[in-house]
Image 1: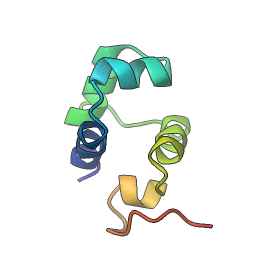
Image 2 (image 1 turned 60 degrees about the vertical axis):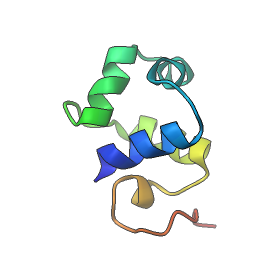
Image 3 (image 1 turned 90 degrees about the vertical axis):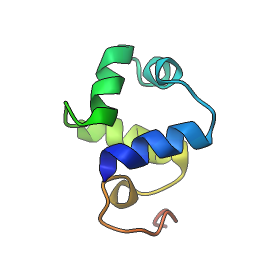
Image 4 (image 1 turned 180 degrees about the vertical axis):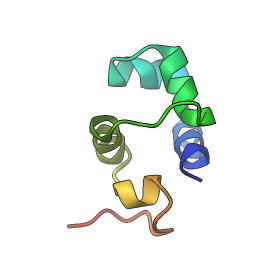
Length: 71
């Protein structure tokens, strides 16, 4: 679930994996591994992604279907 959300959110913003990897300061292959589920996403990366997409970590990891961030 989380991996598909990462990909969907990236594609909704018309971004490439390379662009997201640059933003996160990681290799593109590492980001690709996050999206396909080969690697667990570290907490610090989840925080950056949640802030970038203006959502919650809970949404990114599939705990909730509500993308609205917490206050």
